[in-house]
Image (spheres, rainbow, N blue to C red):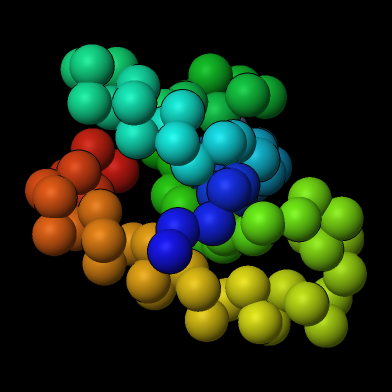
Length: 88
Ligand SMILES: [Zn+2]
């Protein structure tokens, strides 16, 4: 079961900001040949770093660790579908 939201971190050294996107929409965008970019600088070098069903949990450090366990699940799912290459 995938989480509703996925957190992306911009890899650009001057930015390093996070964007939270709806997982379903991200998958749909990629399926249609689109790409995910940083909401702050427009850079395409964003990596999925977390997933959550509750946006409020993103701010909660204790919950963040729990969310961290779900990251690999999300990422491996994308790798299986060959979508992860978009971020590399
Ligand atoms: Zn950025």
